[in-house]
Image (cartoon, rainbow, N blue to C red; front, side, top):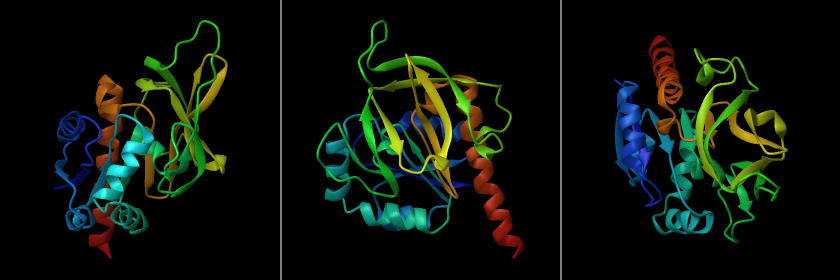
Length: 215
């Protein structure tokens, strides 16, 4: 049994993420309780919308420290879309301070002829950390679904787990550092590839559970 806390801070359709996790074999629980977040086997931080309201809602609900503690605890943690961006120091979209878990800034795509902002629809990933469990059993350069005008720019590029090219710009599409994973795209909207990614995340949680049991 894999219990996943899906953090509710009123920024996005949490039920889509939960349905994807259920299909992947997890038991998701939508919550804004610090105790439930820290007690869960894994944590998912989804999000849709703007950076500043997201951080304001997180701080109003006293969720900043529980999120950081959950990541520091070593349990598997997955950020999705805005849930990736708010892990960074700040954003060109607003003035609020981000969580600062990953050094770097969120930037806006540059305007170019013949490309649309936001990037909306299917695009291909270039998998950087190809041996990452999150990418297991995916096709080469898998298509996933994006909706975003801003992208993360980490100071340390070694955290890049995948990139995506939009127009002439190749930007970070996913990061991975130890137990912390986060993606700019929406796995819950990415058909079979997205379900595989969520299943791989659940597999990571199960592997960690088995490791703890064997100790």
